[in-house]
Image 1 (cartoon, rainbow, N blue to C red):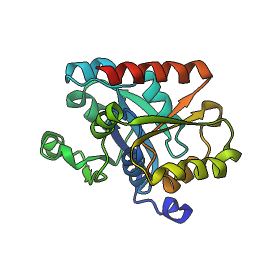
Image 2: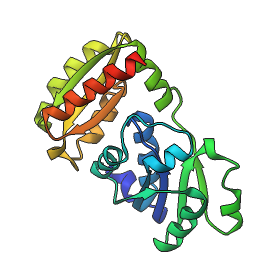
Image 3: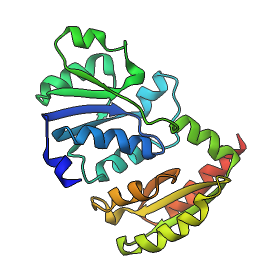
Image 4: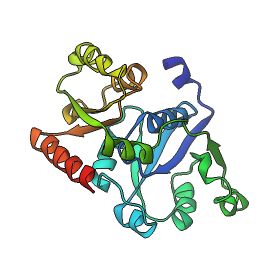
Length: 220
């Protein structure tokens, strides 16, 4: 992995997204961005912006922002308020070389390309999306795993793998936020791609609040 991260085609790159209920598809596309640039800047869409697009996120903007900011390969996180005007301004402000975005946006950004902005579309990870995860959350039994220390990784993997043979469960990993920035987050996604959702917590009260929200979500 280190060799890949040392082979950079671009200096500064931008990418944007909601990153709700962070999953392996998110991780994969962000890592592909970072593998091609020295500095990765990520725009996380605000709740107000999502509402204007008639999108409802499971997590609020601060929760999503903090998780992206905790990823060890992310250099800077900003809020995205409107791609029609903001992307060009960000491209110039941060002296970016390229904007990476999922290929589901093909055709929407031609006006930026015409203005000389380098847009590169990346293939989305097949078989995983936030919409699918939300649908599965409503029908599957939720199982929580909690990690307070990175030295618990091996034990957690063994417990998680017991469930991987059965897809009747919705698997959630809660990581203590004091561990943010640890490179071992790579190991989680490379070793446990079947985890449905990973989030950060500061105290057990936040886990209980998430459980309450999940129960409410499943009833709707």
